[in-house]
Image 1 (tube, rainbow, N blue to C red):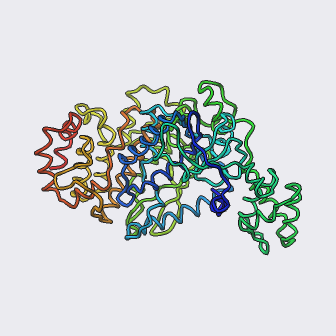
Image 2 (cartoon, rainbow, N blue to C red; image 1 turned 90 degrees about the vertical axis):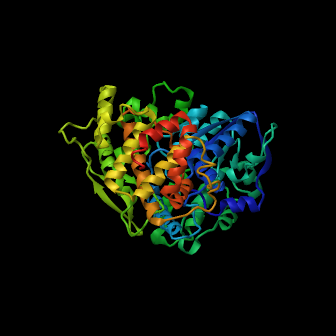
Image 3 (spheres, rainbow, N blue to C red; image 1 turned 180 degrees about the vertical axis):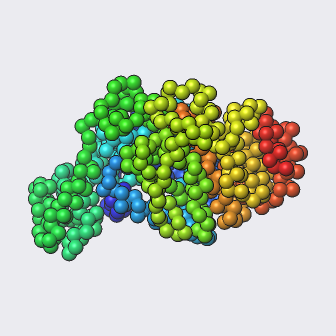
Length: 553
């Protein structure tokens, strides 16, 4: 979660060295880097995301690393096994919920919510470029440190926890990584070594985690900021001595609790002796040690999970029977956009859960709330929903049947349609049926989709050469948030069914600024543009137009 104030302290005191990264490996803190890259590039959030733009930026980043002969290994968090962090996760969710609602009301506060399909876009790029990426069982920070030490290379992240961890080969803060000005010689950056911090601050190596422990705890009359914690630890002969002296400053009635909290905080910086993530990197086919993940999921699921091929929320659903839903730029006077995909999640839980209900955390008005959701275990026809263990026993055709059953549509409707459009059109029809969006919203979505598939997003319709200051409508944003939620959970269902339906390209399915620009221009103008230009479109775009023309009339 990071140590508040530590990055500023490190920068203020220049506790780093100039460095040029080349001809080596770097371990990248996956989700942390994903957030940093999207927000640092100031890619649109308000209109629901720009996944094609994000793909291009990410591709540029990977190209730079390749030019400098740097091999990135992206490591991602898995489920939330650490119950100690649950209050922090909940608090952060509540804060971001309020900020996302303020964006819809005109606030310039869009560095808080990552658009829904950013991780899908990133996974597509990994697959396209064969980039190494692995999902951990649970918390990734200790695994990242273990892997970096094994590969004898630095870590790249904006998480200040890595200033605390024992990384002999250094830590590079994302903000100090000048990849855009790289040359063939390498990428200039600043690298931090904990040993230098200890030397400069006169602190024992074993006392460094106490900086985070003391700064992160409320010691009543001896509450410490980063600078105070470092001053207090100077010259201490051992960690035990430092802890005992700190506890003398605490009221007796809370001393035991404070000691437990300190020790708990220290344990978060321990680097494990063994790592299933590291073992997977070395040999994906090797037998793995027993763990909560391996004892609760079948091998086919874990193989996909490690590569991002199934959603990590599944771990929380199975092990903890809970799930946090998503943030959207939506209308707080209406129900949460994720309500639109509730029945799809019930089918997911029917596949994942044993018997218990799942606690979902979501928005109600402008507050965080939760409810218990009962899994769907039988179909309308009375058939039992297959579980994860059963899935490999089903034929491709049977899994396809389950998919179309879940989406409340008929398989025969898709026989003459290109396979790449089956999943998104099934999701689109589900959106029309359950959300009944304004016809103008549906037209704007479909027309932008056709233009994006054609590969002409930058130009778009005539007179729409730029989307820098696009039109915005909160009711439309709410409807498009419902669409993204439905599409997301359609993709997740397909994954749990071992992907019987062709995987869709999310980078062409949603371009927020273009959709709102089409909405502003109006159906008549965009329709005329399509009718005039479709003959010159790509074969894929023409095929999609033929499929959708009845829907956009």
